[in-house]
Length: 75
Image (tube, rainbow, N blue to C red; front, side):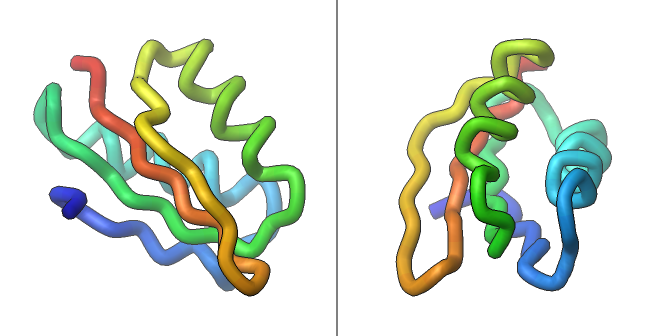
């Protein structure tokens, strides 16, 4: 279970990444953020985002067109 959930299903690229960054800035190191989006190709975006910011991409999956990412704040 994530510490917070960001429902970005109504947002288009690149807004899910931008909103995830804003949300993570308000979180403590080690806390987890679940992000839900419907943007195809978002897996590559979140992988790159985590590489660039140091946050950990713990898991990701897709169900019925909804992509779910679990990120851990790196601090």
